[in-house]
Image 1: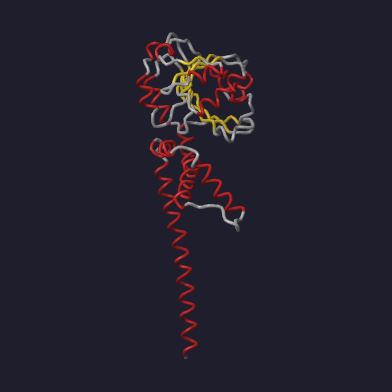
Image 2: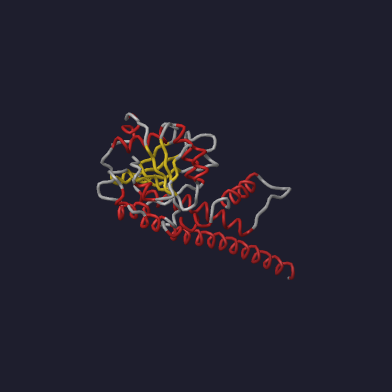
Length: 279
């Protein structure tokens, strides 16, 4: 089914079970609730009070969570904990076929992990909302949302889930998990790497900043709001990231080499002038 088909498909309210109820899951949940979807959640930490305030049923017991007959189980764990969380879930407690979707920042890793453990009669949808609580605080209109229908039989459920983001004005981008990771290694991972490098340099605002330098400080500050676990997950579980890190090192060496060559040229020129003057 094409993106346009999913946009035009009749949407329905879904029962969505969230696995991992950290800040990003909480951010998504608020919009889902506003749209009329019914939410349940489970997490390693106890979010029962927060969920009660939001109108979400929180389950400490994963068995009971899986038996709650969700239309969608939305994986919002960290990249590093994904495999452990999935392996610990007794998926035989599912009472019917379910759509498993994830929102992790890498895509081949969750695709492969989900296909290994999700029952054959359940569907798999890999997604990456390319925004977060900060960039999406004023709405999601025009923000990128990547997805791949990895294994979809129930198009109605899948389309209704995608409609959550499409109806908010997201730019819906259907692409393979492989293509996503290739692009993300060059964009998201590179951004995080440069931001953390600037943090190691401890760059700070000065009285004579240019706008470009202010942008660098903002990049550093924005990057450091994310955990090192996220950054390491972007590296360890995206097979294209290591090459991009090597490319960055090579590029920095090339820039350094050009500066050294220019410095040598200037030194040769000065030496030549000194020799002329000494004659």
